[in-house]
Image 1 (cartoon, helix red, strand yellow):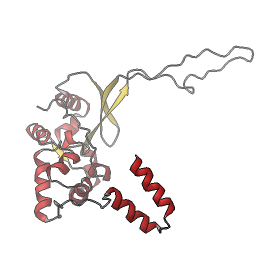
Image 2 (cartoon, rainbow, N blue to C red):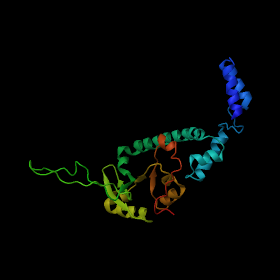
Image 3 (cartoon, rainbow, N blue to C red):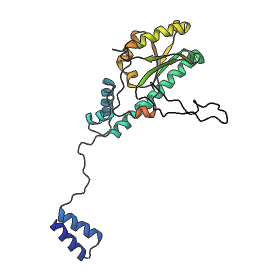
Image 4 (tube, rainbow, N blue to C red):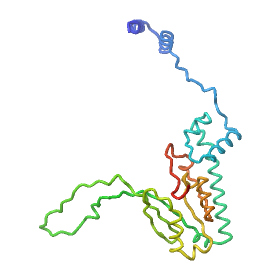
Amino acid sequence: MSRIHKFVEDLAKARKTPKEIKTMFDTAFEVNNKRSTNGRRKVRTDDFIEAVRVYVEADRRVTMEELAIKFETSINTIFHMLSEDYKMKRVRCAQAFLKLNFELGLVFLEKIMTMDETSVSLFTPESKRGSSQWLSKDSNLPLKFKCRESRKKQMVLSFFDNIGVIFQHYLPMRTSDVMNMFLKKFKEKQPEMAKNDWYFHFDNAPCHTANSTKEFLAKKEIKTSSTSCHEEDARGRGDRRQERPEGVD
């Protein structure tokens, strides 16, 4: 500390420019403020991009952070490389839909079956608008208690076509026959559609695009319709990992 105080006193007495003061400070305390460089800089070559693609295809649940560590590069580099592949997938999906449109017309939209899942709270408090009621002029205001939404949630699966919702299913814990249940309900609700050609359509969640899911659907002889990728899908979801769908081993 005494060394620092002495340096500050000498600096106050000396008439130096800011550049000279910085030089004196760096010399006295051996400060190295130069930006460090990484000697293992990666260049985006075709071989490097292909290596990343192969690694992702082998494990669709790998995160962007794991890719960056594996290939010793920044996460932004991985984003940039994968975005071109996602853009080309959009083109391929558009071409596939145009082909079906030319062959079948807009009727092919009636052959698409889709599914979406969401988590809902086991208890949702009544809103002010929902609890509103007519009261007489002299009546007291009704008592209302503060209620909070429950933390426990239930997974709800909704299956629908271009007309509307076919059916909804509240997924119980440790269920392993969702797809088989869907096929059974689908044949009951849409027997004519089930007899003809139809396509199963869902989003780009890792559990939907996994090879095990594709093998399961192929075993059931279910045709799938590709989904074009959105920018948020191309940028990944960090460390969030989605479980594969129930019924897929």
